[in-house]
Amino acid sequence: MIAYALDAARKSGLFECIHVSTDSRNIAEKVVELGFDIDFMRPADLADDHTPIVPVLKYVVEQYRERGHFFDEVVLIMPCAPLIDSSDLIGASALMEQFESRKQVLAVSPYPVPVEWAFDRSDNGILSPLQPGKFSIRSQDLGDKYFDVGMFCFFPENKILMAEGAGDDEAFVGYEVPKSRSVDIDNEDDWLFAEVIYRGLHLDY
Image 1 (cartoon, helix red, strand yellow):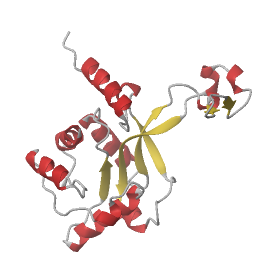
Image 2 (cartoon, rainbow, N blue to C red):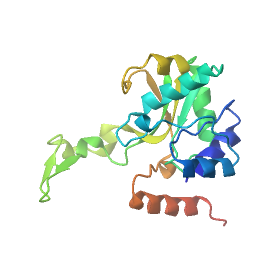
Image 3 (cartoon, rainbow, N blue to C red):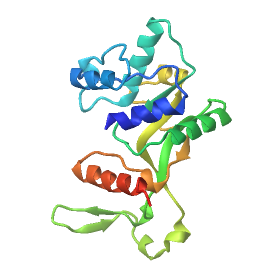
Image 4 (cartoon, helix red, strand yellow):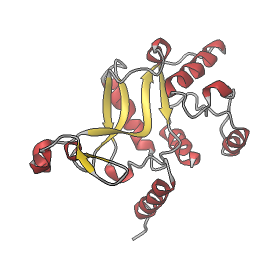
């Protein structure tokens, strides 16, 4: 799965350095087979299931600075979004330039239905509306709301270095990714859905 993200990064032609942050020797070996170098491994204390991503980014930036490498921008590309395209990265880079690197650029997509129609669901299946009464408002009257598609984020390097803890959700601008490619793989169902979309996008008519 990681090969798709790495291929998009390479094809974009944007990056001076492409680094895969991992503590897994198996993943590292696969990445090298794909033609990418890993300059250092991720420490175990930044590789558990509860570690926020910002401390990992800060570690990577600090490691490169110790090696004499300084960057204006740092781009996080998630390996669990295989429908990424190099054009997404190029477009997001242009948006970053438009804001003169004063903003962070996050890949987003509109929710498929209005968030105002959302329910909580109890263990026995009882539904509770999060915004009672909103069900009666037409979707076109509510407007789009956007979510992080888990694909990529562009950061000014100094934003990462100054971040505390898990960071924050301020000073972002959204780069819209089409719904047809907004699949963040967290489970087997996501994987199957992504396979269906991938095949559809690559049909030869």
